[in-house]
Amino acid sequence: MNAMLDTPQTAANPVIAGRNLVKEFPVRAKGILRRKVGAVHAVSGVSLEIGQTETLALVGESGCGKSTTARLMMNLIPPTSGEILYEGRDLTKLSRNQMRPIRRDLQLVFQDPMASLDPRMTVFEIIAEPLRVHNLFKNGGRDRVNSLIEIVGLNPEHRNRYPHEFSGGQRQRIGIARALALQPRVLMLDEPVSALDVSIQAGVINLLEDLQDELGLSYLFVSHDLSVVRHIADKVAVMYLGKIVEEGTTDQLFAGPAHPYTQALMSAIPLPDPRKERTRERIVLQGDVPSPSNPPSGCRFRTRCPLFKELDESQQAKCIDVEPLLRSDHAGLTRAACHYAEPKQLV
Ligand SMILES: Nc1ncnc2c1ncn2[C@@H]1O[C@H](COP(=O)(O)OP(=O)(O)OP(=O)(O)O)[C@@H](O)[C@H]1O
Ligand code: SF4
Ligand SMILES: [Mg+2]
Image (tube, rainbow, N blue to C red; front, side):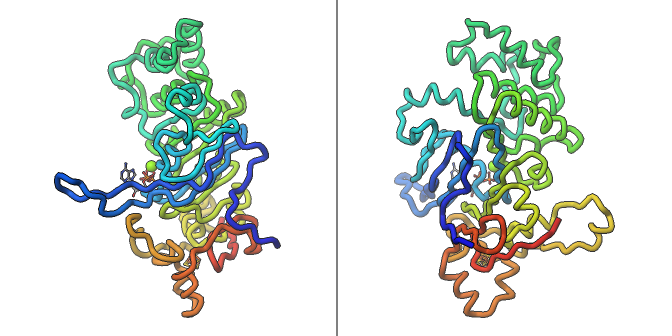
């Protein structure tokens, strides 16, 4: 099998692509001068591609850099280095004025709908606001807002109610309608169902899937919940401490995760069959995630890696000294960043 180093998994015709994205937040000393004393390595060389009508899921533990990556992909925050390619242009090179029309195409849906919706505005006004901001309301805006309310499954008679009068699931539908107002091409969904009851999640997920098919949308779906990801995503990228450690199609990844970190995450997914659930091997990670201000040398996962503990000293030295790159030559179907990657069937 060919070793393919350091090129992202490719979408046939990516709508949007991030290349080698790096984001470091400065850590400053207290005091008047606020000298830079270090950096949080939030995102450290991430490349992603999303095709049309495709969902790429970004998964990983809290603080691994998922939201920062989503914000970078939308060009909401400037990268320390790297490119975002959209319609043949690198968005990071555009001026604010050049970026304005592109903003319409790239929209964000947040985890907590209550925090992202203005409590003093009616549902109608919340959804109309992006149209007004872009001077598009005068031309059929009222009809568009009314049809969006219906598209996302809300009762049109409730258009003059306020966010607090709705349930969590309904509020997320309002957030989705608002994100759709400007007819975007790409939605960055940052944990869109994590704040919702499991019973409500399915309705919102189904809505997102229907909207994707009808409108040809591309999704970056940020989540820490692999069961949700398995349902909605076409492709998955697993992040650990600012880096992608494994990526593949959803089918490939679930058939044989090859990176020890993905294997640990996957071993925690509850299995529907109680007999299998009782007898399965659960991989529990020891220790805390290291600080992104001072990531470990070589493989960033080595301080918690269960496989590392089983290796002999010379093998361990490689994990400590040499950074493993994403590669597909480990006899698996995915691309994993581990010197000793080996696919394992877990679910
Ligand atoms: N504006 C900022 N200034 C300094 N550090 C930041 C900033 N934003 C994020 N970070 C740090 O960058 C790292 C990645 O944060 P990020 O929010 O992207 O993680 P995440 O994967 O989305 O986590 P969660 O699952 O908790 O939402 C964290 O260590 C975080 O503390
Ligand atoms: S490179 Fe080494 S430490 Fe890193 S995941 Fe693979 S075995 Fe574990
Ligand atoms: Mg986040």
